Length: 192
Image (tube, rainbow, N blue to C red):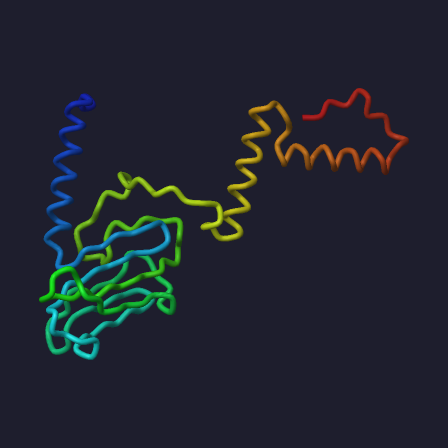
């Protein structure tokens, strides 16, 4: 029976995996970053190019970026769909005078999911090692925000020994029922 790795072995394996991942990502002809809701892809191109010299196509499920009449620099299928209408690209000057960057902004459809790569044929990153940036409640969509606020309220209530929102609803329903049926005796009823 194989034993589980020691903490130092696990740390060494993690470092090796991280170095391999960094080398694979550095070898790509583009750089990319992501937040939980969007991806930013930067594709370096020669500084003499203009927007009309580029061939950029972004659909719900795929991307193709390159210079016209040349093989694409990045081409493939996304691991998950995007909002193509909310995704954009621009040609920007870079720090180096002899190059420019095609900056591609991709708006994820599922804003609760990390992507292991931009296109499915590219090397993957370990999404379990991503440390998300702190977010504000105002960054969340209405439904998610409501759920998080309810969870925070319930947690505070539990900490001070008071009923959660669900328990409060049940007690309110019981009070209404008792008010509607005064003939019933609830003195020996066990609730909970």
